[in-house]
Length: 225
Image (cartoon, rainbow, N blue to C red; front, side, top):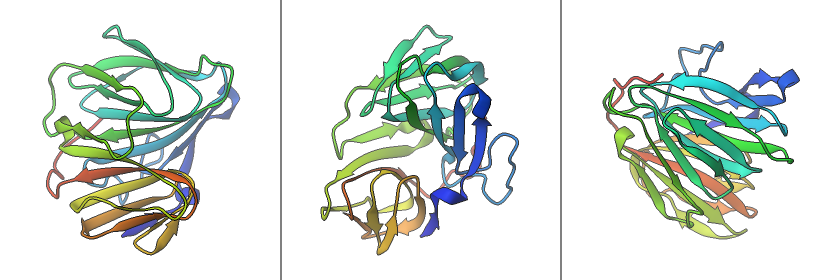
């Protein structure tokens, strides 16, 4: 298990524009050849947008983009005509496929925090697709077959235990609270990259929420952009 702490993330964004970004992997102008990906996951960004701030229209291709709102509301618009407001508990996925453009903004009156995870697809190309699942229930898996991955949402009370999936690769991101994962305590924005996971248990040290990506052991030749 390779634990990456919140303070190891590197900072991006644009403070003057009300955008604060924290990246777990090599991203944009920050290039780290030893930290390009883990399995299908090629980015796990924590974004904080002040009211009225946002990312103007920009392109993506050959990437599965999954967004989880921590607090506030995220307004999404894309070139395929989708306009939605994403709230805490919703899972949003944009399959960029052969190419799509989108806008992400905080049109609300309160600060917005969201976690955005990019996954490399099994095959490039295809037509863009969009999906939003409102209020996903605890322990309900969300499949991203285009990337051969499964997202599990876990919400734990203090002292509550849960098994995490056995898998060739697990990427665990703590959204809020503290959890003990295989004997190691992780706090908000900490992450663990686990290889050959078997019999791993998570225990809530406090009330906590975590996102767990379950992935197979193949597919390292995938590309994302």
